Image 1 (cartoon, helix red, strand yellow):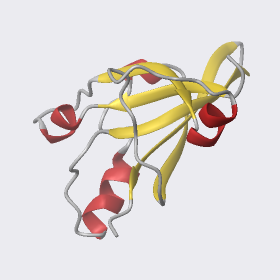
Image 2: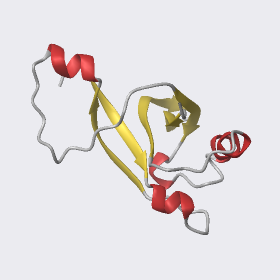
Image 3: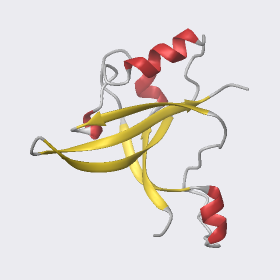
Image 4: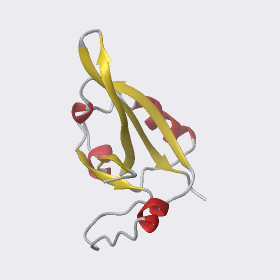
Length: 116
């Protein structure tokens, strides 16, 4: 599908749970302006993320689906610094995949929306 990307989501429940593991899901994402340009009607079951100002962490990961809280520690620290408690899933995208030192790695942007 034109204008689409691989969306990645980390569940709020796994962020708040004890331990280092994260519940990660992926899907196909499209920005609202591109959805409108294509006149694409999406069923209501498809989760939507709000727009707005977002604080992102850019990472290079060999296994993005095995991401842990240690991997996103700088993002979690920024939440604490802002005195924010996660109130929704973290959302982002896998924006590039390439070979590095004979192995695939993936560029991942993951973040939270700033409070107004």
